[in-house]
Amino acid sequence: MRALGLLLSAGRMAGRYRYRFHEHWDLDAAPDAVYAVLEAVDDYPSWWPRLSFTRIDPHSGTVGVRSLLPYELRLTVRERRRDPRARVLEAALDGDLAGRIRWTVQPRGAGTRARFEQDVELRNPRMRRWGPVARPVFLASHGWVMRRGRRGLRRRLERPRAGI
Image (tube, rainbow, N blue to C red; front, top):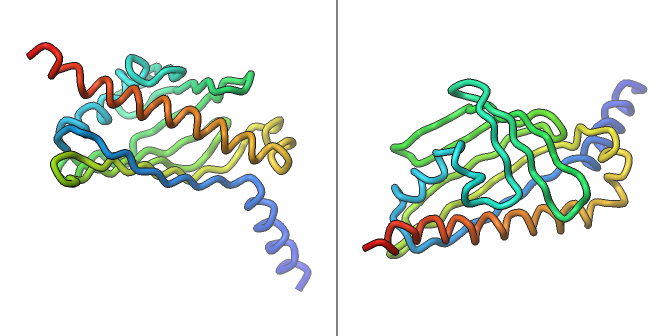
C-alpha cells in the first residue's frame, strides 16, 4: 500500500510540472506549402522570432527559445516522424523540457489548418522549483512565443506571392 501511495504522489508531482498545448493555425496557403516550411527546421529562425536552431545531425538539433522571461529554454530535438504524405512531423524533446511536439497539416477550405501539439514536462531544476506558482507566467510566455511564430509563418508563406 505504501508503494501505491508513493506512485500516486509521484503522479501528482509530475502533473505539477507537465504542460500540454494544443493549437491550430488557419493559414491562407496550400497544405503542401505549409508542410514544406514546417519541415525545414533549419529555417525556423528566419521566420519565427526568438528561436535559434543548430543542426547536430540529419535527424536532430538544438533549439533555443527566448520568451518574455529572462531565460532561454535550451532543448535537444530529435525527429521521430516525418511523413510528407500524411503531412505529419513529430519530434522528441529533451533538455529544459522533455516530451514531444507534433505538427499535423491538413486542408481547410481554400487554405490549411496546421495543428500543433506539445506534451512536455519541466526538467530544469530552477523552473521546477518555481513551476507550481509560475505556471500562469509560463503559460502566458508560451502563448506569446506561439503568437509570434504564427505571425512569422503567415509572413513567410506570403513571400513567394509577393514576387509574382
